[in-house]
Image 1 (cartoon, each protein chain N blue to C red):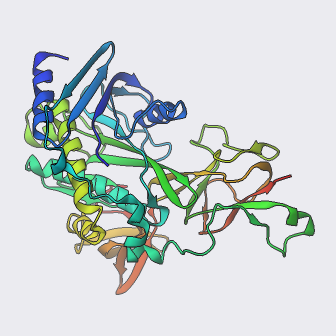
Image 2 (tube, rainbow over the protein chains, first blue to last red; image 1 turned 90 degrees about the vertical axis):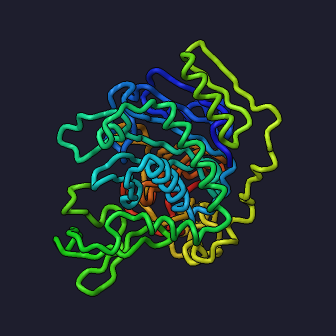
Image 3 (cartoon, rainbow over the protein chains, first blue to last red; image 1 turned 180 degrees about the vertical axis):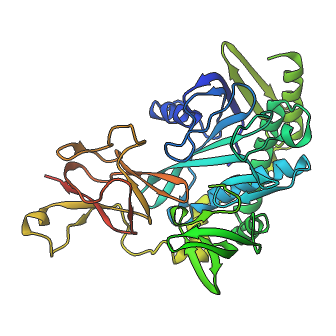
Length: 246
Length: 163
């Protein structure tokens, strides 16, 4: 599943994920190709919420995976692999990175990266995957957002290329290490999970409560102990309160 | 790309397991190849074909019963009119979306003819967006689920007239 043999660097694009999708329609993209954009003017956050990045400051890129062959019931392993690659990248730079469920990366309680994955299914199998990553590298002005960047944490400017190469390298290593040992993958994901086993404020349909985040189900649902009862939550069913993050 | 960036690229290729990297930027294109690299060292442990069988945890999530998204005769209990129709079912639990984005056109609408491999909807779960392809050919008779609402595994999404 090696990626990074081909890197296409665009000055400006609506979204790198869309660009991959367009190339795919014309069969013009090979497995592992990385599309990097200096400027993304309609970057995809979670459906409709847009990730806005100043040109050249941060890293926004997409990776195309062909012949993924992962059963749709196990799709969450894709999120886990990408998240762990990003955590490894940041830890290499001595940043205390954690995975904020389901697919954001936090440093010191602030968002530093987000992941958006789009799959094409054939029956119940994921055939092709577009991984979109937004990683804050040199941005230092986050306005009202609880966000941070590598530079914001460490003070020094970081060349975007270095960070991209590091991601490619670590993604390849993470994939080959864990794809044959999914229980180890799950364990590593849990070891790096933000707020795990820490009492924190959450909100579900019944209201705000103090809960204990215990982990994530194989389906990707979040497990939180709520007043002694274990509850599992879909993305839209739970809100992190104390961190004002979701 | 400046000299420093080219040097960084060479370093990256030298250090990583990748044997060749090609970069395209505007009119510029560069390919860096590692001479005679220990290709064997980079054997991929992926065995993707074997994957679905491997993880026992997932078994419960993806029941092996009747493959979803595959054409199946519409249920008997629907009007007899419907029995000549096929359904496209959801291969997973998630949220059903009829278009690629809030401001985008629906992938398919009633009366439209779809073919094998056409994208008919997106099902999202935990921020993973899955494009669902039709595996049948026919005309959409009915969209059975509202946009942006939850769907269950195997839930019928579209009624299709194959004739």
